[in-house]
Image (cartoon, rainbow, N blue to C red; front, top):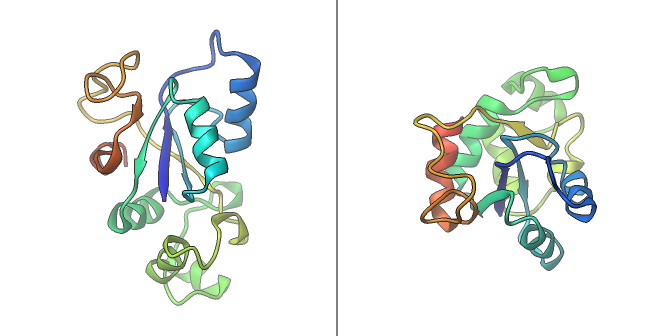
Length: 151
């Protein structure tokens, strides 16, 4: 699964790229979405690579992000009790099902698929240069380090 984080704003963005942001629900800087590795999503990510950073998220980071930044409709925090009411045994079981693609995030009732993250501690290196010199583009497994700093 890919974690995609929007790093740059909307000034001077072409309409087709802005439409792609809307389809991915990346409407603001420091928003993050988790997407399956399908050719359609890879093409969308390739189109917006100059405005986002992305990479392969691991299970532990995804679990931590969902526990700390997971929200329901109305900006309500995601808790174990609410997850049990949804029909899952625990948050960890729900994350495992999403991670193994048994269920899609958009099919979990009332769960907001967008994570609003804080700016990373110690800041970005550069939002105009690509990884590894800056922070834009594909960073592979290193996305987990950035997510840890942003959660």
